[in-house]
Amino acid sequence: MKRDLTMNQQGVNELAVDELYLDYGSGASANPILKGVSMHLRKGEVVALLGPSGSGKTTLLRAVAGLESPRAGTIDIGERRVFDGGRRFEMPAEERNLGLVFQSYALWPHKTVFDNVAYGLKLRKLSAADIKPRVMEVLAQLGLGHLGERFPHQLSGGQQQRVAIARALVYNPPVILLDEPLSNLDAKLREEARAFLRELIVRLGLSALMVTHDQGEAMAISDRILLLNNGRIEQQGSPQSMYETPDTLFTAEFMGSNNRLPGRLVSRDGGGVTIDIDGTRLHGTARGQVGEGITPLIRVEEVRISAGQVDNALQLPLVTCMYLGDRWECLFKRGDIVLRAYARTRLDDGQYWLQLPADKLWVF
Image (tube, rainbow, N blue to C red; front, side):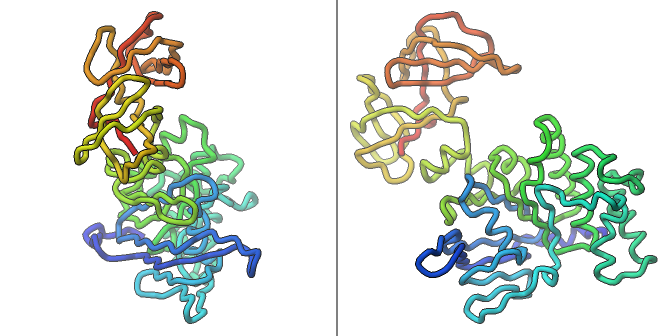
């Protein structure tokens, strides 16, 4: 069961998907879900499939697992081709040897933790003498060694999640597939489970493909993010690059908490732009193809609040402040201009200057 981390060779593809097309229905009523998706997963890498509902992320995961039938394209797991649309070849799901962790955990309620984890090995006709040490080892690795004789209803949500992960890992699959693995947990437990899952993946050198709609979860756990939009990959890259250098307005808005402002383009000089917002000239940074119809955008955490006049700023009245524990989120508004910003203390009523740094004021 133990993985030799020295074998974690970056650049070796454990999973490769090429030009995958998948429709629901057929003929004139066919609804295209995946529209030519290509992606890869390297050995020891965690890739998050991120996107809104209906973007195709869960369908892509299920196609890799063999639970959905694509129309065209190829899927390779290691050196094995498991789907080839051109040859009309589709390997059954049970032969793909992938570890699956479902959103609902899908534990057998009448089986103990030990028997739930051992189930896949029994299906593979392993002997009881071979099964016991492998199950006990994976339970120990996930901190479940003392819970082997309990039933799922006797466990917390976090413990049930670990049992589902243990069941996926016990036969040492080349890739584990995680479908919204933290969505059934409450907010505090999700943060703890997120840290546990990332630590486990790094410690065991796992190769994992994870579906999530939560950008914070994707950034915390994954090495690389694939952002899907309407059946296509909008952008992919490291969590940091996706957050700090989005290529499109869709990526920028999905990857953070933002202020979208009304504005008019005045001029452009290379990557720098000058815009007009309700009579105030501001400098910003062009992202993507900037045309006449522009969308200025800035992350909430990048807005700087000042009581006195400062450069590249809008003067707006304070509407309200909301307490978030470690900070206050303050709302400013004048006409169509609405800005949110963070403050360390609650602000008094009045007018404030909201500075928008030129390199953080993105114009799409």
